[in-house]
Image: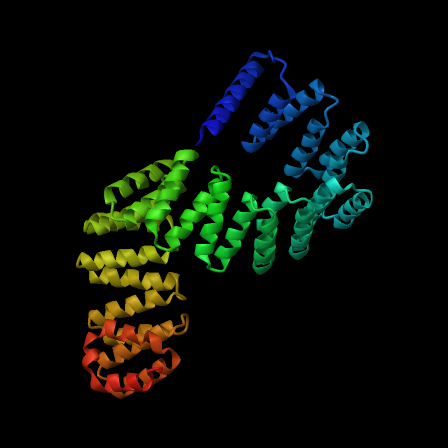
Length: 468
């Protein structure tokens, strides 16, 4: 957390404490409009509607010529799902502040909450007819909000695009744009729009962030990171850009770079359990197990029932070859969250090293039951059975896997199993099929049966399919 944020938080905390002490004593002091709005924002953020209502009533009493508290009153009712009272509040406000566009836009939003979308669009269309150039962007933004509630996400995208073309500094439109892109699946259009937008507005942090999110969707992680880093360069306090950039570095297994970003977040912002968990994961992957455990423990103190904390602590003890302790942490993770296949796989591997093959077998089976579409878990299960001499069962598992998972690697594994069983003609037939389907995957065959490197017949078949 930076100094400005810390000072602001301290000021708000002091303001809230003083106000609540005065309320308890029944001796409220006069406050400036800005202070009342700060109190209102605090209570809304903390989801304390009764206290928020009290502040609104005080604001209306003390500042009867300010439209802000009337607008906030209507919005509070909307957020509480009390649309009828919101309409009454809007009637009161419009009677006092006739012609104020904010009340009309909020009424359009209220109609949307009620499912009266035609009425909402009518209000906005009427406002557009007489709109000045500097208000058109806000009207298009309001139109986008109605489309969002109407679940017409493609129209929402185009309304936001027009709003930003009218006013590139419309921050709310930029912020809503990413949500819209995700809802409308307009990732390609998002990249085209934001690249063009940034050519004209290169210092828009939100536009860079939106662009990064769209690159990420297509797996263009390097480009996404570059976009997030531009956003950070423009605003060193852009927390989400730090976090998203770090998350992508983890995807790329660049843990040192990820760690630098996470530590920047730790230095600048209020930490949470996810941050401690991510930092711990980086240290784990970098081999600094003691530091990793310290951060996992910090995450644990913030949430005693976080399954990932227990899993990663198990990973630390596994790497330290403390297998009994690792198994206890893996079991705890599964007790909290029993639909994570990697937890079962980790526990199976641990029991295997503890000399408990029956337990290992049970947990390998659980892993494929939880994620039957995941090829890697079927292959590891079959490999375990082959290493245990249970070849018939391994073949049954591989045949079953093809009902749920896809990939030539499963077929190569079956070939290895058939060869181990002495069913060579059948194995060689399937080898031809597998090589024809995916030649590049054949190397996995030698991982399971290294002796095949010296098998002249197998090598001759592979040579036949060798691409030139």
